[in-house]
Image 1 (cartoon, rainbow, N blue to C red):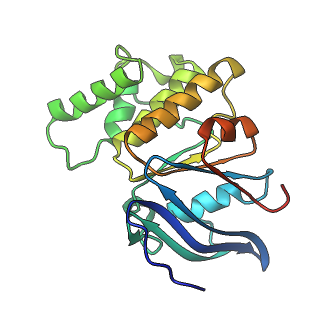
Image 2: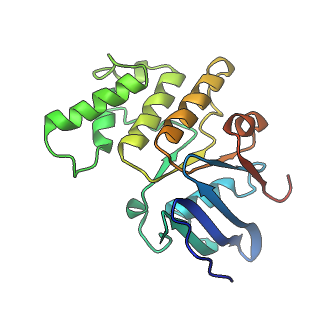
Length: 219
């Protein structure tokens, strides 16, 4: 396989190939600039989430994978998941039920940010950006689906990722809120100049994202 020069301003996939028991699932090379979106489309079982698992560093060892992944010019594929600085937003918000909304967000603030006041200030700013300024002490169980989605995104962003991976995060939202949450997610990520990789089976997601679309085989 070729070894390309690293792309210094975003996320680059070079000759990424994933297979299961010898059967090829994914073969992709792509470059995603800062604030840009690459949408990977495919039916259920086509390997969309498997690709994100490889990028994020938690691919099941049952899969065989190869290829380079550069983030801001650094090949991250040999790094553990926690060192890759890939923020991941899943279908479910996965908020901690035993923590308040504020507690969920504080959990994500990097340990390099010292002092309770400074850490809480970052969380309050995130809640303000999400339009949920008075929700610090709320129980996550009392939130609507759209509110949970916004909190989940802000929790990811508070961790200071350098790229954002989206695993069909809009699929379980009701139709009335889906467009609003899509735009909120993309606007917040672009404001931070994050390269974004979205996997979905929904053409409306791809249309809202803009940018390039990569179709997995079988689509």
